[in-house]
Length: 498
Image 1 (spheres, rainbow, N blue to C red):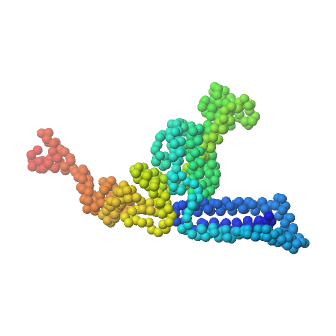
Image 2: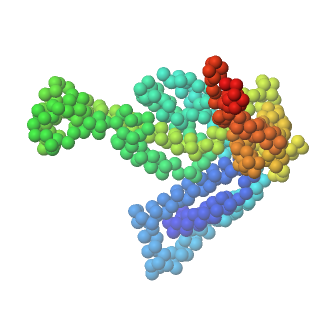
Image 3: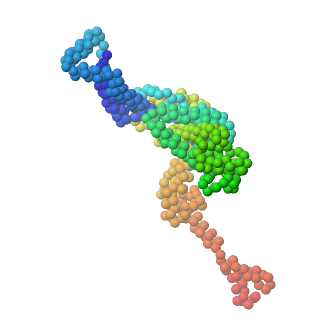
């Protein structure tokens, strides 16, 4: 059995080697998405082992059983040489009994680990479990949670694509219809559990607890003040209708506040809020200058405890919603990739789907082995995985079509979407300003300089034509009742014909 001093020395050595491996793993090159996920998982395991060793060292140094102190006294006392030779004899006897048993030192164990870390082309095993839909952490798999969402009462039914885009928008779910209890709480609990699981598998080093603690504090503060979005109606009536009793000298004066205001003030104190106007005023005035503990228990509302429990439940649900919103924001890249993956699957025919499913393991293997430039003979745009997008998707978005704009300096745009978008961008606006033409909706889809100038000149002519011209627009009437323009009237008058 090793001595406590040797155990402590061994643990300190392992701590140092763990730190070295963590640094090397963090700085190592990761060629694939799977390598990045596995790297974080390895660092997490190293970190967990480091903290475990630290706790063991703390227990050793506390020396609650006194074994360490006894050993220190033995090796540093007057018989230190006798103790040394007795320990040496124990070691020799152990090797004599087991001549073929060799203990692997930590240096050899960690050298193997570091050599594997230094090899970027190493074979990456499946260190963590993902579903087929998640594709080893690339996409979210919210189908089970989505089924629970669509089965909620009084909730607008949406398709899976819309749910992916808006599942964290809880303010759009009216509390008045869902009540946010029961099935709803079960739904958001499932959603939070899944996101936590996905986060732990893809980003195990991120400290969500610190974010959650800050969110809990903020939500509780906003809920109590009635400013939490989506929960304003839950603001305690006490806060909304609190009454300062110092200006009032009798219960009669309090009657002027009305039934509703008195009810809110009584609810604020946890008192019964029923009865006539006079009874409510007298009950509230009786609290002036007294603590709630001094009042009769009969006056205390039996519902105050239930209201407090309901408040705590509401805060818990609101905090879970806040946690989900925070995680959804952190997983924005995965959500975008999931949406694109769902769109891609929906656009495929059944035959294409089966064919791609059969080829998927091969693609994953090629991705890990290929460390060079992707094969791209048609010069297709690269997708989220660094590989050329499928040719059918390239044609679906019209990226095989090129549009040139003379106003932008003969700039070429790929696809109708980019072409339409460029009319509101800085390059086209700058070109229109150089021509002295405003970039308005009248010039949409105009790319030629001549066409833009001709249309602008035509618009100016029409604008001038629309202006007021006294000679043509002012009318005169002669003695015979004939209506003529001002110019014609003056000509006839000069000729003496009128």
